[in-house]
Image (tube, rainbow, N blue to C red):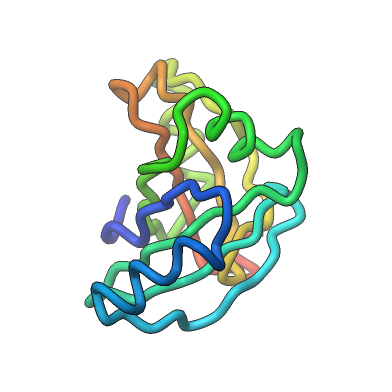
Length: 138
């Protein structure tokens, strides 16, 4: 079962250029920047209430975010939902014939396990399911 919207992913060409808007105009503070090798991105985290904004910068041309930027340009990339049991969520989605990008979780940002649902099965919205990384969710 989903617990909440965890984060909104925003694709950008450059975190350094984009963060000025979030810091200078919106008055947010960048909590941290980390690299996520499994997704070939650098991620800058900004907290807004209980939801994070994640600025996603590709680290290579084969990154899914690099391909998104080529096609769509900068902007909203995905919605991330938090669950207590990521594998159960994925199993239920498969039973309902939902098209998955990941059938098993992969390491994500913020020490979470993640998996994406294909936009073709989610009304055009790239959807990420994430769970805190612990023994139950590995």
